[in-house]
Image (cartoon, rainbow, N blue to C red; front, side):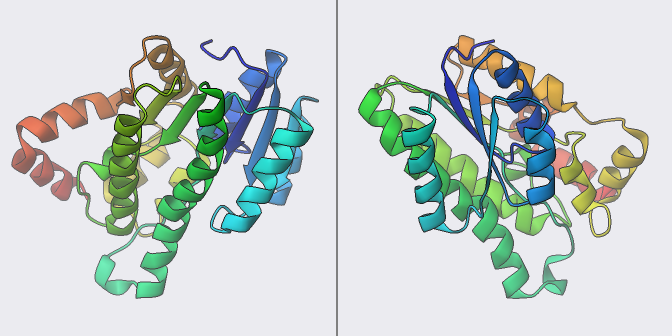
Length: 257
């Protein structure tokens, strides 16, 4: 495993890919502060290992994020790894949504990313070290019908991280933007009602989705190789296909949606 530190902070650490990473790091003997808005899943995950410390947190509340990060730094220790996994993935036709619904997705997925990363980065830059992992998505590259709000948030996150990494090339921090395709986690369930048909089929069959364990494996490998942008599994081919044949891939996705 690429992580060599003593303290990690993982948002969305009570489920999905965040939980997989949490359990692996805790098993290594490091302390893991997990942030989530679901108190029940926080407590359930924390009960799995004594090295896991839960914090109920709304990432859209900047002041609360600052307070928790400061608390972790002072009470647990300097944060050696940030993995920002927290997000929501509702789906539906854009013109059927209210502006408030669309803005809420942006507030959580993009503004929440900015709140967490800007806060933690300020500590890491002083120390000139740390692993800095943020989840974007292939959905921020390839437009997908019924995923307009989510795609917009991930496009914003993808570009934010690319610029942030370029501005901190010599910082001593190991950055990684992770852009997966569909992953078999509880997040997928949010897109069942209003989402594209291929997501519903993947959720029902378990096919054409990557596992969270596989995604976390690729993260560690990319960190070891200092690869900053990671399109794991299915997303790798989706990214190449869209760059070479955007019209063809968009047509296929739209038919499957």
